Length: 358
Image 1 (cartoon, rainbow, N blue to C red):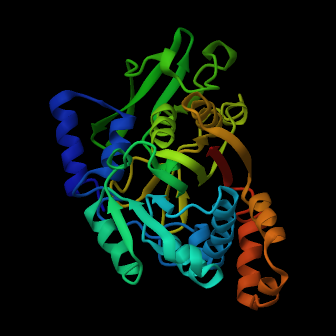
Image 2: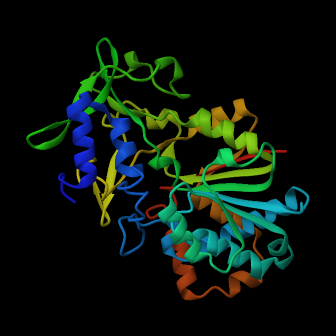
Image 3: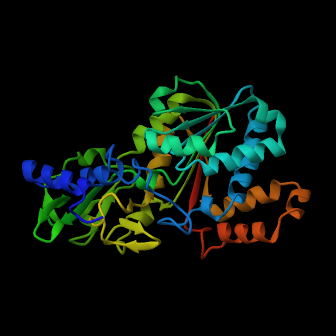
């Protein structure tokens, strides 16, 4: 898609009418414009034919291991009936399908009393998910706000959700932070600097003090932690929040050597730092501030149960699985497991945060 695409034209027209826009607004339009955004159109895809590799695209083993963990959670919280299983942003529905199918085979009693929901605001993605889950009783809701207070007894999980939420892009100058904007010139979309559109007092936990960093240090301000933690704590009465994503604690995310931030784009398995190109045709991501999620969760009433690499999380699940199940693994499943846990593959790229409320 060139910059003369419908979405690029919409953004360019907005810039011509109102002036440069904050990068956060550009990212939100590029990914979530209701008609042409990368996610809203359903064009985003994973695996060999898509734009990026995820744990889900490796194979169904990832979902089966999560199913073991969720079964353990059900037993841990007293085997409630019904037991809620909720995924936020289920993409193409493959992970939810893998989890539900695995639970049906491992623990039929839980499968019978599960109450399944997917939170998905985009109709085209919802259609894709409904086709993938045509044989499963799943309810779709548009937002977390559609779920009543303290109504969830079970697990709410997300896989690579938070890294795609729009961020403020900020740059350090001798006088303090300034915000990075997007404008339009002869060569297309380009950067400019403007006044901050956020209150520095609202910066997430662990956000660095500007005086501790070199001039021109650029990073992302992730503004979502308090909102998401508050909403998750509001709906969860008893159970766990499982967040799987790539990111760092604030001390590492904002380290002085990370002077260009973590913003990046993916298209056809190629990583790019040109996040202003291919508007609506490429994924744009920024690493998650897990410190912010943890601290905001504590303020909202969510206790941190664990935070670890995906390697350690899956290894812990492996230790709890019946030996007979492991003996039935095919060579393909063994290869999948190696991809999921190997430090040089997906094992250390992804982190898993588990928060609970009891």
